[in-house]
Image (cartoon, rainbow, N blue to C red):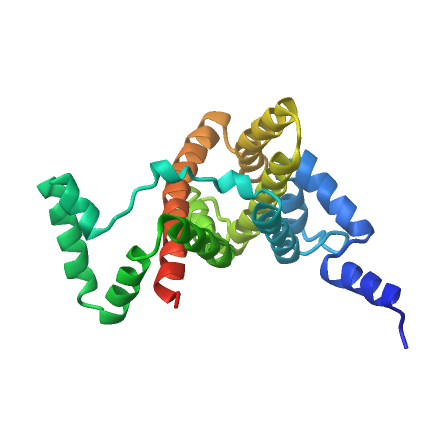
Length: 254
């Protein structure tokens, strides 16, 4: 029978890919923007960890760090919480807010289950609402982030129409660049010094346009314009996905 040590080694080697090719993958991914994607597109893939595996590994790592290692990052002052209850709106005496509450209930009224779940959420205390919102985010956000990868690739496909690149190449680039972002954000969370956090933040900001320029070629000005459009579109999509994650958890709560 295999020992516990052998089981652990097999898990690390097979599922997390903590072998020699992981270090080659990380070296390109972290320090040479776009180089790993170019290697894959050129067909040199055996020496590197698969894009989906590297993405999922560091996605899980980031959300684990955020969930269990930094509870104070999502701290909300109870005195500043806004309770969207009908009673609170009536006390404000602002007809505009009353109209919004009425409209919301009218919309939810078309879906009795959702309306009931939302009313139960509003009846919770501020601390319970906060706890449920945070738990919902960490439960559904990883799935939401993964579902956004095809959208990220679609934005790239639109921005580089006429380049001759296939959708699969854009999806590969999306997995690599988002895996890098997960690593940087995880390091920013655990780094103790402000200087190192700022340095990592600057590298995170500069990485994507540099990677786009290396993989897709073209002039630097055109790359900068595409990067701005990509970041604007994806930031809006990401915000909607984050809100949807919280709303899904609230609506499905018991």
